[in-house]
Amino acid sequence: MIEDMYAVMQRINEIKKRFGLQQRHVVPGTEQRFEKETEQRLRETMSQEAKQVERKPTAEKYSVEQIKDLVQIYSKKMGVPVSLINAVIEKESGFNQYAVSVKGAKGLMQLMPGVMRQVGVSNPFVPEDNIRGGIAHLKRLLIKYDWDYKKALAAYNAGENVVDTRGIPPYRETREYIRKVIDAYVQNSE
Image (cartoon, rainbow, N blue to C red; front, top):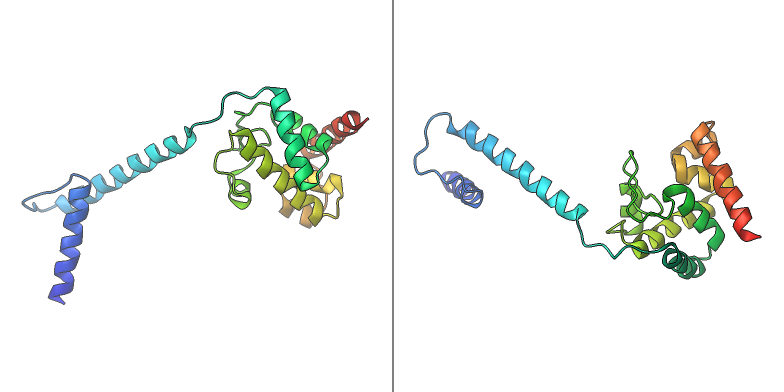
């Protein structure tokens, strides 16, 4: 038991040293200060790491033509109509690769963090990554809803759970979204 305590104390000292909190003499009440300082430094470190993730190098600003070229490539690879993808991007971000919504959706196809994890998007602001992941997500929804564009777009906009339980939800935003994307899709398909 004493050996276990010694190992724990040794580990605590390693952690203190790592965070620059090495103390030669333990003064009563310093354990709480150590915990607070450690917690604060961990928060600062996590905050810095989060900022670094957000500042990952991104590709240079892409033109609408370059974005549409990428859409052409990935939509053919995945079997989703080019016009549909362009309509989604137009409605989601207006072809702005750096777009961020108030709800946390990012990039051209406005991918949420959970979707990014599902489809393997590491940097949503890199058009290749965002378009590939967005098309993969949309294709999965199209397959799930038997290529019913309205249901797939409703799930893309409002979430699958809502569509699974209610069908196309009565939300004005979602219904407008579906109408605008389908109108743009039809217009670009002609």
